[in-house]
Figure 1 (spheres, rainbow, N blue to C red):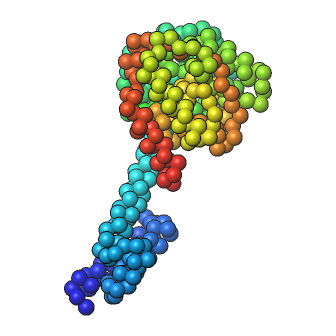
Figure 2: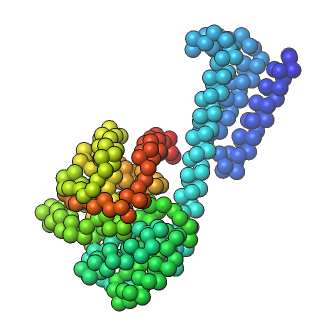
Figure 3: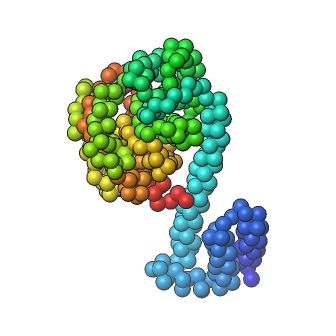
Length: 344
């Protein structure tokens, strides 16, 4: 036996015991243990008889056994990368749950029993949300504003200005991005607002129009079986919409039809209205802007009854200054494919 063969056999045996130890300590699941054991014993078999490795390689049309080792190593590296990414994402979810619990426990609120609540995010908005929220409160709807770690004075100003109005402010101690805002607001409604009938997702930068809420409400009246109503700027109209934005959105519509098998005229929309019971079906787990596509994927997979309604979207200099880069569409596609195929 050559020193190389001895080293391969020795390392393989160590890996088997290492895998068994991790499995006993519940750091490794059964599938990973099988990969450890089978991989180690395969290496031992090949180390004892190089000819076996050559015959195995010829079965896969690989001329040299060394090439087969390289290809197999690439597969293992890809598998290890995805496993590590899954672990990091699961830890991220757990950390976010802790932050959410702390934030909800410190919420400032004036709870009234209205039938509709608006969940609104704010990050670096300064005082822009104040007049937007004022219009909503004047219509006797409730508001949950999620201050995502940057507008520390905004909540004080809101409670001072709207002291006797139904408004809840929740401050994240760190920035958690958009889907965390929606989930935090949804969790607050699930726990404390049992008499709420409808939940609305609404931007605080003035891009959405409160007047369009009537289209959502009309859809629910016409079809009591509806569970969620989505906006469509392409059924309605847009003001000052750049052509580059329109092209990107059209490509997003095509991708959604292929990826989620759901036919819509608009996809990355932040204006939604749903029944409170629908919150129990929609639990968002993706970060940043891909959460909008994930919601559509959930609607399709869980057969949630939906409808699109026309609205008007206003693109002001202020709202466009906070745009996601168009190049970020590639990151959205990449993350969606990872979540759908690899995340477990």
